[in-house]
Amino acid sequence: MRRLKGDIMELGSAIRTSKMGLYQWLVIAVCTLCNIMDGYDLFVMGFALPHLPEGFAAPAEKGYLVSSAFLGMALGMILIAPLADRYGRRPLALIGLTLNFVGMILAAFSPSFETLAASRFITGLGVGVMTTIIVVLATEYASAKKRNFAIGIIVLGLPLGSTIAGAVGLTVIDVYGGWQGLFVVGAVLSGAILLLTIVMLPESIEFLKTKDTEDSRKRVAAILDRIGGAVAEAARTDAPVTTPAAREVEPTTTASFSRLFSPRFRERTILLWLAFGGMVTTQYFITSWTPQLISNVTGRNDLGGIVGTVISFGGMLGALIFAVVGLRMLATKIAWIASLISAFCLIAFVLLISTPLALVAAAILGTFAMMAVAAGTSMAPPLYPLDLRARGYGSMIGFGRVGAILMPIIVGYALTVFTPLTLYVAAVVPIAIAAIVAFILWRRTRDELAAEGQQSDQKVLEAT
Image (cartoon, rainbow, N blue to C red; front, side, top):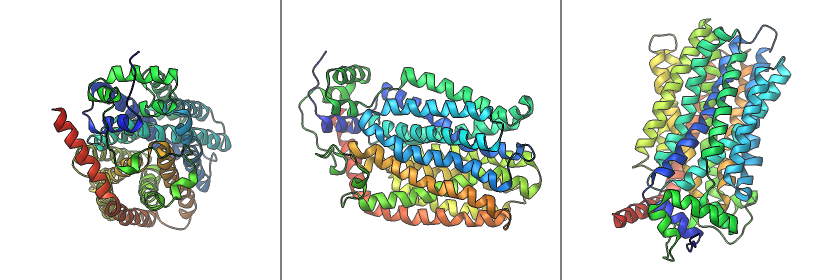
């Protein structure tokens, strides 16, 4: 075995500043497949709601069915995913996928509201852990120049999963004979992705180097052999490499929650939480409740599913646009621009909801809402050091799920008082707040992130 001489900061900098190889893109592809389950789970309950049998769940209880998964996600992100900073990215990702698989099976055979709510909580717990880990892992395998593109591709898995859920909702329910078919398909999909991940997903090489054991050194060497190129060369030399201070591993090994609110990280933590929380609250309202609300407005269950599927297609386009635009623009800047446009698109959708242009408005709304979420997903990991990354990113998306947890419950009760159109107008507020806060975050961190991008460009030029 060849001796690895480079330290953690040198290896991390080599990854961020070198051209990405085929193996690194393979890691991104596996993470994208994992994220399909987040998208599928996000939409599956929304498609199932109109098809639940009479007396299975009251209108308010339907809100709890949606929120139980979001509650599981939040707890998984905040309480379990941070363990990846101690035990590794790969084992936590596998735990998350396993929980997702078990939850889908239980949901498919749930005989009552209570058991379905419990199964949705388990599924959410797994999704919360898994989605946190794959973004952190992808960040640690992607170069700074291609990071936004890589995250955009991973986020593409979310609307792709939602589109699969929509296609299943429009076909399998009739074939299978009930809403349970949605979860049967989800279990099969989750099981297949779990098996693929066991075989294909590696551990973070930056994390392995922090362990400094004989086994971890062997694993790093094996992964570096697969990557090859400048990354492997930098890891086996003593050449000094500089990195932006915010990303270097700090002397302490304690990734405690309180460190997120230390003077060094407090402001960015609060801004990230508020910005992403607003984006996700509106996005989850749109995706989770649109099939039911459109059905309420039009009296057609099939039309609600069609509009929801169109929003998912728009989301796929939004993730792709972010991936391309993110090659030249900071994620924080894209976040506030896309959030602002989403607010106007939501208003337009309400105004056009009873016209043939509603489907066009839905597609555009889905596009920019997903662009905002993709940018929000990408902007957090680079703003924390290695030993705080999973906790920092996990806490941000976990906090973002708070709005997602409360929104379905509130909507469930609000439907007895307000019209669906009024609820859509109310959903403009959180995404508008997100636009303002993301703008502030962009102003505060743009010099730091731009410096990293310039360093990456310089290293690539030197290599060529």
